[in-house]
Amino acid sequence: MDARELKIPGAWEFTPRIFPDNRGLFLEWFKDDVFRATVGQSLTLTQANHSISAKGVVRGVHFAQVPPSQGKYVYCVAGAVLDVVIDIRVGSPTFGAWDSVLLDSVDRRAVYVSEGLGHAFLSLQDDSCVTYLCSTGYNPTGEFGTNPLDPALALPWPDDIELRVSDKDREAPSLEQAQAAGILPNYEECLRFYAGLRDEAATK
Image (tube, rainbow, N blue to C red; front, side, top):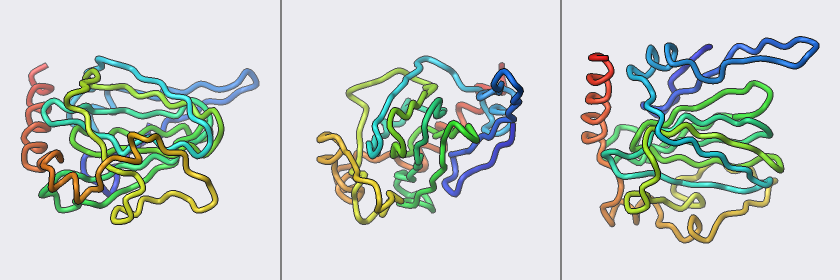
């Protein structure tokens, strides 16, 4: 399995080795040793989510308060999605920037999104299936979002696909409004949180 950090520090792409034969194929889509060597910690799995989306569906931009927030290891089981990670950590050198990865059932990449980062994806095919391994469970009082159509973010949604956005996501604040409301994660707090996770992993 190969790994590379995205343009947004705290997000990584993982590309597995695929072993096809006349029966089908086999791959390891998550490996703790590779994850730990790359991220500096193990992924504590407390919840696994699964979504199925029609073509054009946008999910996000979602994030949670730090601590504890929610780290996500995102994998497309079937279909294809354009996965986007957004740096919404106030004070970060890359605040407001994003990077994207095509997750599909061909190359079968995965993306890890650290706590405090924003996450969204666009389904490029009908019935695209996405599985998320989550470091913490859903916390409705600590979950937030920003508008995926915010022109200031200029996320890379293709012009030739009609976007389908939930009312909740469409009515979410812009990044500027979310910052003014004080709901965005703080970069320095995120760094301290990441260091704590690495220190915890080093003692195990």
